[in-house]
Structure formats: structure tokens, C-alpha cells
Image 1 (cartoon, helix red, strand yellow):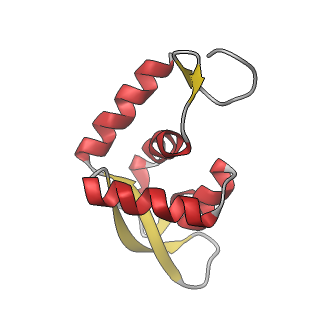
Image 2 (cartoon, rainbow, N blue to C red):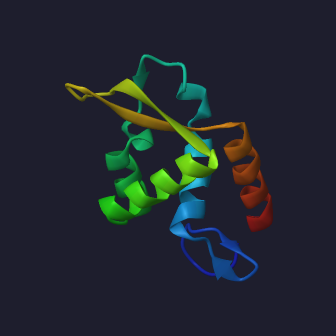
Length: 105
């Protein structure tokens, strides 16, 4: 990692929010079959984790769904009253996230 902080960088440049989102979701793959999922895989949680607007998160998620990197499922979220959409990586999304992780090392 170059520079300060916890944001990984690639080739001297910071990752985009879209790239950060893929790497973030890759950390939660083991929850995809759980009845209760962590809030970090919902739009609200992604917004908090990546420190950006909800509209940006929605746009990124919509684009990644179109290219087949992620899929959504309606899930019960920890400490929430109603089910929400949770987002997880597809096989191609996992491969892309892995490439991004390797590029940041």
C-alpha cells in the first residue's frame, strides 16, 4: 500500500468506490447462505462502509448487476425489522475482486 490510511492503492492511484465495493463484498461471501446477513452487505451498510452517497452505491450496484458481477437477494438483516436486499458476488465478480486485491498488494 502506498500513501496513508486504510485505502488500498493500485499502481500509485487510489481504488475507485466501485472497486472498493467489490473488494468489500468479497469479505462477506461466507454469509450468502445465512438467514441473517450483516448490514454491511446492504445499500445502507455499503454507504456507511465506503463513506459515499446512497445514490452512488445504487448506481454502482445497478451497473455491477448488469455486467453480472453481483446478485441481490431479499434477506433478514441483523437488528432490522424488515427484510432488505443483500448483495453478493457472482463467480465472475469474485474473480474480478481477486484480481483487484492482487493488484493492490
